[in-house]
Image 1 (cartoon, rainbow, N blue to C red):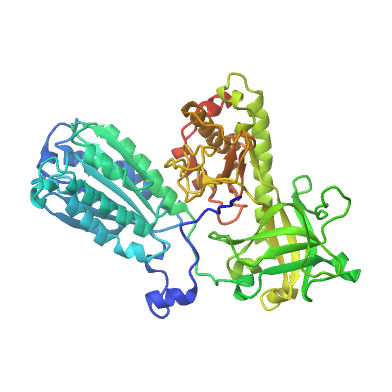
Image 2: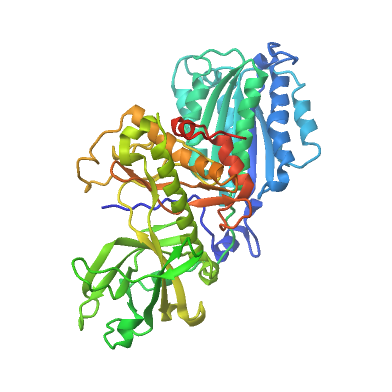
Length: 587
């Protein structure tokens, strides 16, 4: 049995650590900015006049950069949550940082870029020097945990690095070194803080652009496209790149908040036990004084509030659990919460800390920061979001099950989408007396997910990514790559069934269609995304911890409103499930 929590790319940084890093009183370097870096080939071949309506290739490139990337971002800069900076590296025999961190709103930015397009190209195109300049340029971004970097690399031919490196024309060593350098840049920033797009512009054949294609394959979340001598083709790719930048710039920014370590502060403790108040009042309590379970609740969609529910019943009996046990060693940590194993149990009377677990194994999710611990709505909002997402999943399953002609119908329950049930446990704990009134805190708990944890899309607009290996039961086509481990304990006929390529495509279309479905059926008012969880043949997609974008921003920090919806729709491609449900894109 395994459980894997998604490792988010950003974590809240303690104030003391920030001051040590940046000097007394210093804030986060760069302030969580998004840094766009255009890397443009300015070799002699860029003087070729083969692009309609332009003097040469270089002029066409800079015109497209301005019209299809910079201008759209400037028009929507008021919607962006982060500052955007623009840099330009030109490379030929050497590489030069021509523009360094110009503000997107700088009135001279457009004119400067267009002026660069009027300078004739010359010399050879050496990728290695360009990547060396890129590494030096983004060094400051690596030190800022809230910064993100988006690189657009454009060339019209194969690299000439073998000339200055002293290798033969077909020697693979120069390319290996270039890939290694780009990979090091990507790893230093992290996959969620770095995106890379490469364009082969001009009449370059497959062999000429093979190096650029392999270079883009060296890092996650990268794209490559041969645009030919078409300004329209290059413009289309730049518009897609602009959408990726917009997603980075509208993503939530880690704030300077106070870390809270809670039950992790006492390494000698292994278990925190919260007995129900009924048990304590009846004089049957075994746990230490100062810890009590006040209530167990779930969110009720009909009433729009929380209702109290009983603890689990002991299997085969009418007796119910009398306590909640939370192990003190975390098994995962996200951007907002820490995860601990937990379970309900019925204590053996007179034998402290011994009892019989009831129900399935669970995980408890508790706030990482003091501010979130003291926010009365922080934990309840998690349950509310999950309940609303579960409602959408039930409607989606019902409608998908009634459409005719959908090839995925033969897969049966494998195409179901559901959310794992979650509960809100309200406990009193003397360990929290100094942080919250009466030491009363909320613990979110949900059933433990068994299998390979996978993320299929994000709240920042990213859809799909790299396939990854692992259990055959987790198809992961169109999944955002995650660190994972295989569940060697799983057995059963269904889990051993192999997933063919056709099934992969159908399953991938189903999970992405779910997000699209919520947008269409809500009339553009909501969009459920950040789809993450496990998949198997018997249960289909079992998800947890959704993000919901809404027009009125009612779903917390991960709700990016219309900008988040736009980012998803820009990156989403309708598949068989969307078409069968009659879902259409209105970008």
